[in-house]
Image (cartoon, rainbow over all chains, first blue to last red; front, side):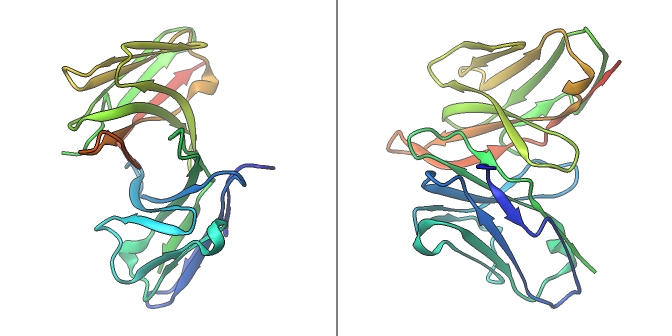
Length: 113
Length: 116
């Protein structure tokens, strides 16, 4: 499978715990995006990388959120001190710079109890 | 209200009928894209229309773009039960330099149900 993969698919955690999600983009894609989607809504942009550089972060991305893309390959999104409001589907996508058609992974569904 | 709002929020039709969904947006765009999402899963890209294009076709899909009204429509002809999904428009906004910001801004989506 050469698509975008995300791990884990589901994560249940208790409020206050830290969680980390991983995204492996399509190998030749130099851009990687993170979005968050809540029930009944469209995805909301969180942040994106071009190679290893983080080019933009949304105001939605509070200080508790951090994302990395070491070596411009896979990316991790960490949420510290989770809150119930963090419960959502976290989607990763990748694209080539030249064509902004984004290919999405299946997402990680986070439930904060 | 959000960029990229879809209308209607929900659409229920019979197999074989056509489905039309509309999208409005607010800023200047490089392109507008439509994505499909099956229940609880990732999004799949359907079609992209550039800001200098007015209409585009792909199989049973027809997309129109009216930049003067900042609106787009997606028509699915001869619908099938397998078309049941949520459909989202997403805008690739143009920055002051005339290039893409990179991120996509999605609307709330239209839930399409096609009854066999």
